[in-house]
Image (tube, rainbow, N blue to C red; front, side, top):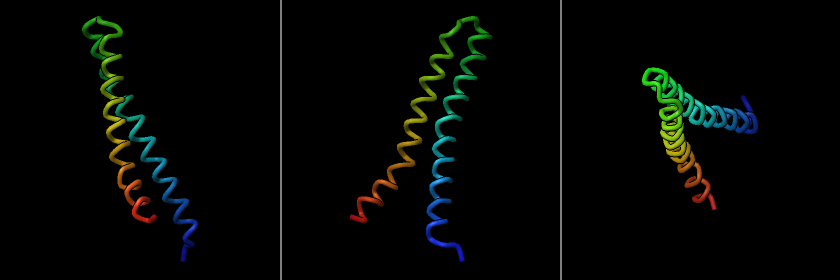
Length: 78
């Protein structure tokens, strides 16, 4: 039977993976879409910057929604 400590390590690693996913995918994806829009419409760097801002806002919301249950759980412990 796995120890409780190894479960905590696995949980921390999976949480770090989720955070990385929430940060990289929206920002990178929307920047790529912005890059393609700039290339197609010849408006460098307008859509690239707009894509970064949209991706950053989605990232902030995603990380916030991921952290809120953990923060509430820790508050209820005390």
